[in-house]
Length: 252
Image (cartoon, rainbow, N blue to C red; front, side, top):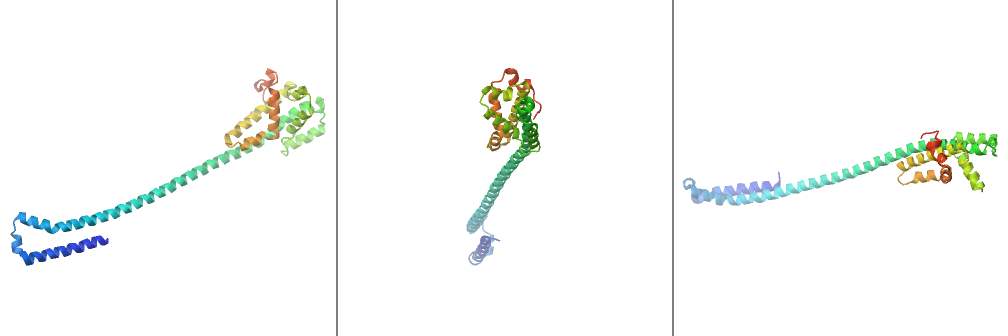
């Protein structure tokens, strides 16, 4: 029990004892019991008014302490809620980061397959102009080595780099254009490459807010070849510059 209550009870007991003593010595109980109701009420009011004030003060301090305890409890709850909110934010950020990471991992797996797909397309395009059967200078043996390297996944950009080298070694703008749009077959392969690469870039932009993956894809051998192709596509005749008309073999 609070010490203030014990103090109040002690003072109350002493006060009542003094009141009883006062009545016994100065008034007498017989006279006291015969007092008019009005006088008796005034006496009791005056006698117990200090006790009422005492308990009012004690109650105030007790209530103040209880309010302080409630305030401290509310403050502790507020701190706990704030920490819980911070933890919820951290967990939410971690979940978002995990989701982004998972999407990027899924994209990288898809991108690896698409790199091989683009390598096959660029290989067909390269052979269509540079193979010995087409009047080119790349032998059957070298073609087999390039396709082996590309197909095994060792170097899926081998043909793209060879096309870039061939394009750079050729000074004639018409010959450069013919590498990609010299025949309907080459136009189909070129448009197929552009169509597939652009789909890959759009996927990369969705999962890569900072464009780190996107820039890496653009800076690859396939990416550089795509830029050259886009430049020549702008000069190609209407039927051959549209992949919906030349057709695409692979839907990504």
